[in-house]
Image (cartoon, rainbow, N blue to C red; front, side, top):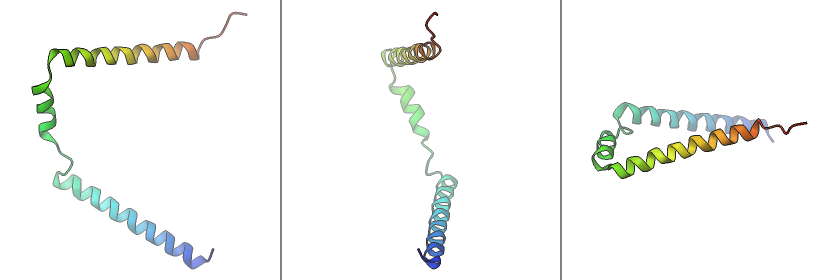
Length: 78
């Protein structure tokens, strides 16, 4: 590969990276990623059954993680 092509590829990728960074900074500064109604709607439309299901799923995740951890550390007796 020619040296000029490598320099051009590095400069184009640096320019595109800087452009992406500026776009993200602009979005954060102007509030494009803020969703204030998301949490309000979530609590407004959640009922006890949904909350119970979410708690049960969290408990299952914890139990699975604990089981995996025990299996990872398991060593059969000699």
